[in-house]
Image 1 (cartoon, rainbow, N blue to C red):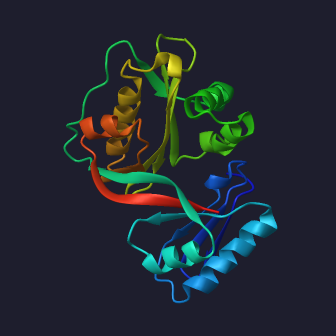
Image 2: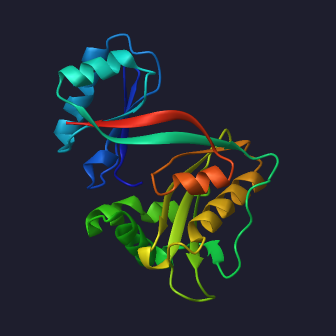
Image 3: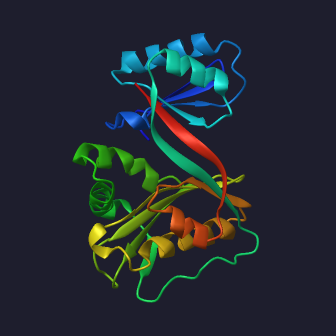
Length: 232
């Protein structure tokens, strides 16, 4: 999104997105880190200069050297989520349930989408607004799908799909709490899989929340790793 910066520090990918929620300012290991201590400290400096606390998103057990450094420097795991993957060739996932209207969202509906994100995840207005940038709606490789309970009705759910040729990333699955238990989360996720399959993308992946794990199980996702977010 506009205002974001990405830096590479010895195998760490550091993303400063400008979102108010500090756990969204994430450093991710993307390659072997020859000097983990120096890389972590360099990442902390980047975050500090931007006015953020750093958060590190790590696959559990994949980077024990980084975990050891973070532990020594006072970081703790604040969120732990399963990483889940689903092949898309078969298109055998659960179908959309009747009564749910799904369509691509536009910038005109941004405020409604932001509000759904806010109430779904109990975010501050500023954090929710930061998660739904205007640039998302103009990017051909990003699709925001919205759900309504009737044609022309208000947005009650949303999901974002990043259409990378190697694997579609599904993020921000949100349903207004007043409309849960109606299959809307399942319908949104199935629509995201349909869209990715239509682009001939071979796999979809996501990091599941506890509330979403059952949905993803029913849709054929498999757990391939667990991802921890470390924050000090």
